[in-house]
Image 1 (cartoon, protein in one colour):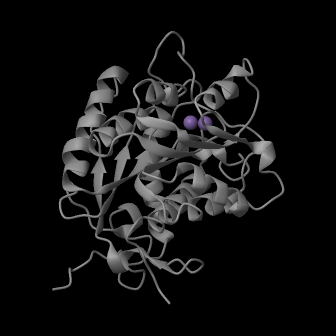
Image 2: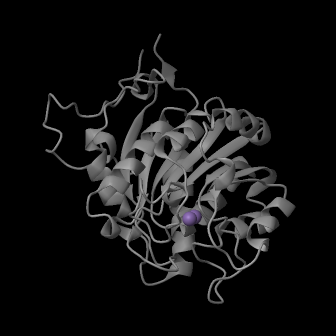
Length: 318
Ligand code: MN
Ligand code: MN
């Protein structure tokens, strides 16, 4: 018997500005039981080094997602034809204690999502959260390949003496064997730094580092052929820091850098992940207080929809 699949609340059943602001107007449930994929928020910003505010990211992304319709007109993806998806709410982080948040997040993902064999689609939150998420993912899937969109490499050893912060997650992930450096690609890196080591260290770990200048003025679809080849061969995680985009498209973030990706380039990167064995995705660093227009969260919501559209098992209509 065919499963009854959740459908987003349609704009002809309830005006798009009405009703509870769940991700993509999906139903909610307490955990990922029975789901193929779930949206989950991690309202954390105590790992940020400059402007905070990403604690408000998940709620604003949900609010802006109310405009998104269920079918992808460009790729013909119809995720709700074949996947059971819901919004399982937010992780109850301890906003006074960053190290404790690491275990809170890992345990939540392990017990409430991965134990039910669902794919987590995370609404951040600052980039610190990817480290505890990947700890949980490793327990289930082993080390993953990584597609990482960002202005920053996020491989600092410490920030202000601390090993856990939003500029350190991928250093910690390498140290703990959560990601396979030879199956890792970073896209969009740029800006001023402290030393060339910021982008050289990841290359020494086997990463393919695609600096923003390599992306300027062109389609990234050809690049994605190389990326797929590099990260294939096992489970893959997709992590997108909204500051990978140019601040013209996404000003509402804590550490903006000029000269970034366009929204269409970011969509090409996500769409280029189709066919990979994606086991999780996140969209982090949306800081609504720095964008009262809501556009940054709107972009983030659309990026999450594009990620949903390339998950394994998605139906594409003829
Ligand atoms: Mn980042
Ligand atoms: Mn960044």
